[in-house]
Amino acid sequence: MSGKIIRLSKSQYCKGKNCLKSIWLYNFEKKFADSPSEFQAILFRQGNEVGDLARQYFGNGEFIDEDYKKPDEAIEHT
View 1 (cartoon, one colour):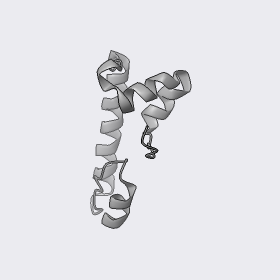
View 2 (cartoon, rainbow, N blue to C red):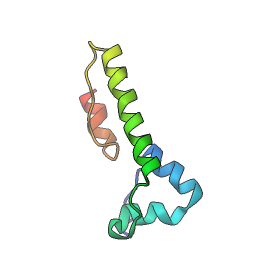
View 3 (cartoon, one colour):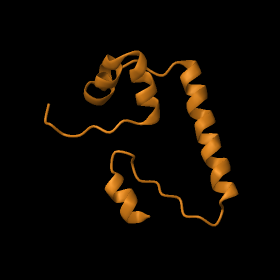
């Protein structure tokens, strides 16, 4: 490992509470990681819908779309 800081998304954190190996696979060996289950796909879709509704509610705001693994860029954009 390179000593690089790995940032976790909310979904990775929750998944890792059940299986730490899944976080490692996701970050370093994606070809071995499990595909999202049908239930997880539904949760992802619902999360996206909540984000869409929030953007409608705060319509005059600016959407910050930087990758969660690059917080410095998001802060600069903000």
